[in-house]
Image (cartoon, rainbow, N blue to C red; front, side):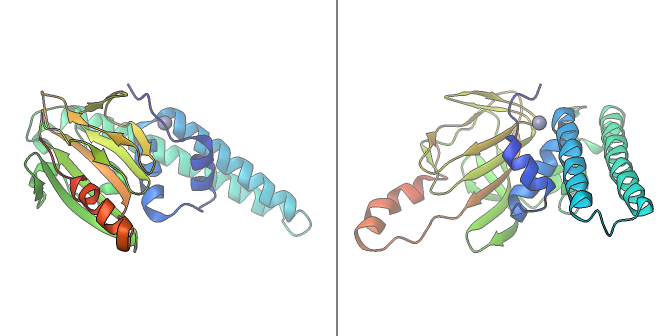
Length: 235
Ligand SMILES: [Zn+2]
C-alpha cells in the first residue's frame, strides 16, 4: 500500500510541464503505481485546459475545445489501460522476473532504460550493499539514477546536500520515520539525516534523483567534505 505521495504543488507543476526532468520522471513513475495521483493529475490537466480555453475564449472554436478534452480523456484512459496491463503481466509473466516475485514489473516510464529485468542491468558497485545505474544528469547539479540496496543492507548517516526525490520500484526499506514500499514517493530536503535499511526479504530497488553536492570553498569545503564522502558509505 502506497502511503507517501507527491504534494499537490508538485503534481500541479508536473501537470503544467514546469518540473525539472528528474523530478518529473519521479512524479510520472509514482503515478504509474498510484491511482489517486493519476486521478489528481487528470483533474489538474483538465483545470489547466479549462483555464487555457477561458484565456483564449475569443479564438478557440468549440471543435478545438472538444478535440482537446477528448485527447485528455484518451491519454488518461490509455495510462489506465497500460497500468492494468502492467499489473496483469506482473502477475502472469513470471518468466520476466528472475526472483519469481510476481508483483515485479518495470514501469512504462523507465523501459527506455530498463528493458525487462532490473537484475540484468550493468550495476556499478558504490558501497558494500549498494549498487547504482546512472540514467542521466538532468543538469549540472542533478543526478538521476537507479539504486539497489542489498536485502538487509543499510546506508549509515546518509546526509543530503541538496533535495533528493526517491520512488521505490521494488522491495522496501525503512528509516527512522517508517517503512516505504513499492510506489512510495519521498522527498528529502537538504540536511535531513537518516539511515535507510532495506528489508531482509529482498533487495530494494529505487529511482533516486539528487542534487549533486555543491562546491564549497575554503573552511566550508574542509568542514563538509567528510559529510559528502559519507553520503554513500555504509555499515
Ligand atoms: Zn500517489
